[in-house]
Image (tube, rainbow, N blue to C red):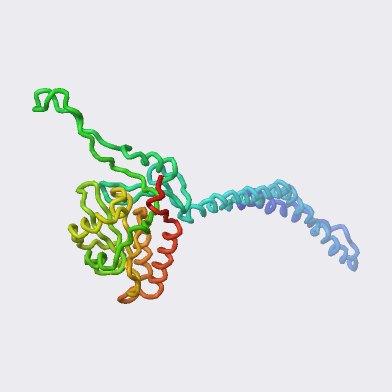
Length: 310
């Protein structure tokens, strides 16, 4: 904008020169008194109308064409930049929506899980990816047949390894016909009043875990005592390896039987995570106890008797 103004200012400075040349007019009035008229002849000086030849410069209409420069309307076209609407489109991303860990599709808060048996972890999955691993043989690996001359017998079948991924079923079961007594619970020597028991396909052994301030904590289990008790309680052996668990709550001191359920393994880890957040003091505190009671209530509502399975 300033560049355009400098272009017209020099023309405006040259114009006063013709105005000074018009000064000789005072010679006409011989009347000395009327020599005031030469003063009026200063009007030619007011003939700075030649100064109005700044109108050539005042062809500042081109200068007013400098208004194109003032046409910061292109600058106001920076409103596209103000179109932070793309930035507001980033707000959904700020809502930390969950994604399927297989295909990265967005998933709802309530979604299925798939167990990764190699890393002993749970993965969030969309419905299509979840269904891929519901079949027991899905994702199984096969070892190659022995090479000729490599010591293998002709026609030897390939060895099928276990699948790496398994979908966690949404199955809740109880067995009112075979309650677990408090004496049987005490024989397991679990140091707390609630635990879940998981059988791993890798070794076939059952491991006990309980919720604690550190999350799911593994504890030593007397496997002989477990096998002896499980022989009289079909529910204890009904859980699928790696993806289902047996949840047992000792309950209050006035109860004669422990509460036993078959539940998905992700429900157990959900409870362990909740305890980690809510645990206060030595015994967990009132809020943690309420959370356990609420959790067991929801499990009880969803549980179907084992004898009613198709």
